[in-house]
Length: 78
Picture 1 (cartoon, rainbow, N blue to C red):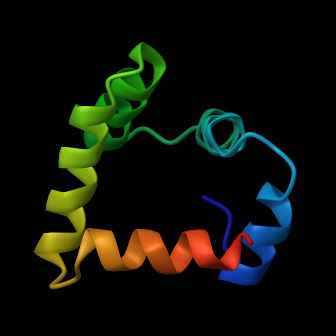
Picture 2: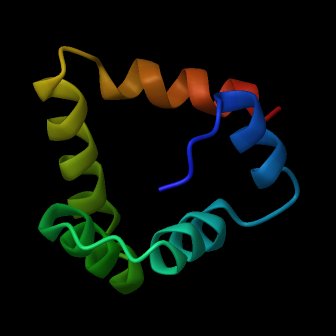
């Protein structure tokens, strides 16, 4: 996937639907990871609960709090 800093990502997302941007980035970079493919499938179905659970597990495995990381990310977009 692209290597960009959070400010570049925030600029890319500004004024655009973040879901479409992220889905486009994943599909255009040919990512073939089972977890990512599962995540994309849930996202395409609109299954927010499953997407959230995957994100919480992902951050939890790295010793981070999903809620805090999500809020920090969202504050960059304002």
